[in-house]
Length: 421
Image (cartoon, rainbow, N blue to C red; front, side, top):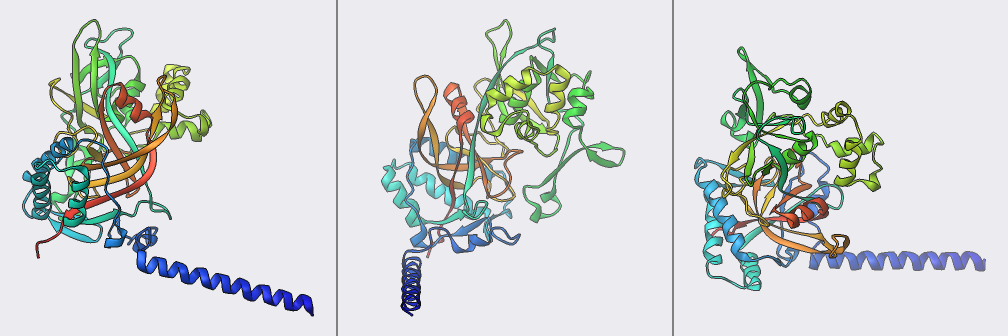
């Protein structure tokens, strides 16, 4: 009897504790707001929005760890992009739709304030006071976004083919066609089909295997230069732009994206992991290079062909900055690439994540916060969905080190100016 009474007593106490904590959590959520927008919990459904408008009590403090002058340059490039769009263009912020005029006014308003050279604290308050703020729902139950970085890759090349430099870097073929579906249906903004004409039909363009192994583009005068290894070409294609250091010369050529074959990107690194060639915990770009360099040429090319996507390039002036998919210049540390079907192109955003800290020998010794206002000005073959963002970090050894080490989860927010009362 005593045991039964003791058990019932403990049970009542346990229920009382549960009720107490449930009540406390309800009060916290009601008055302080959920740490994550409630509607985002349905992100697994097809109808869930990619961005949700935040309440005042959900808005974070917008810190920025870079100079605001570079942000102004990025804003100017997005305004150049908006200037070239049809007036009837609309942009989706999740389930909300805004006009081209609204986004243009937002950035002009922002630029005018930046010209006053505000402090970072003043700028943060300005954003909170004058802009509507949308958070990405990301992917998964935590609603986080995975960040990576890209940079301007540098490779050794020759303007003539020889026994060492024998892998061609191709310019855009004349028969490559881009069909932008928004020209036929405004709801298809950001969507395109790539192919080539076959009589009266449009058919898919050649794959990496057809281009590199079957040599279908040979003898068409498309070679910009020749590289030593097809892996160098792949890395350049993944970055989207870069520099050619010409053999036996002091010349460097700046090259940039000029189109792609429209095929879906597939990660060669992931293929190496899934096929057991590299253990997941040991994977790095260096490890990938080391493993592939041990393969015969034919086997190495067979692995690279697992990614059917192929990027073409054009030569630009060495002083010309890199352009993104919006055909405006990218600002290192201020431009991002995202999925154009998900996030509004050209728009102001802010992210909060972490980056690696290195010692003098280049070894990673820790992490530190990375918080930055950016402009959404590019896209990438591997950057798909609400849970992926690629951060443009420019050129040089520091940029390369950042791009090769940066893979971190975090949050991203998008902004549009509040309408006047």
